[in-house]
Length: 109
Image (cartoon, rainbow, N blue to C red; front, side):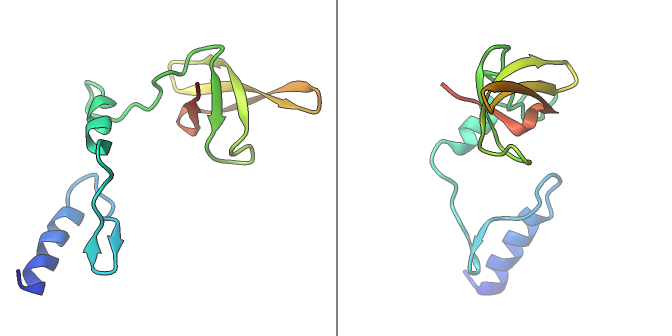
């Protein structure tokens, strides 16, 4: 396939609503890991949006993904319908409540 045609096909994907950009290696898009697309489809709600809150229930162990407490493990104390969560993080022989967006959490086994 000629280079311009290949580039134009990538441009059309990058111009799709909801797509920020393809992940590239040099001038070529990288393939996604096997099963990733199927996992995203399984996490898609009736509204068409991804819902990563699966497994987030009160009492569950969670890992904080971002912010000042990133990579810390805590216990989910509560989760409200608006997506706000309170996590109890073990710090200095006690549990400190931290309020955050539930999208910043992932349930761990």
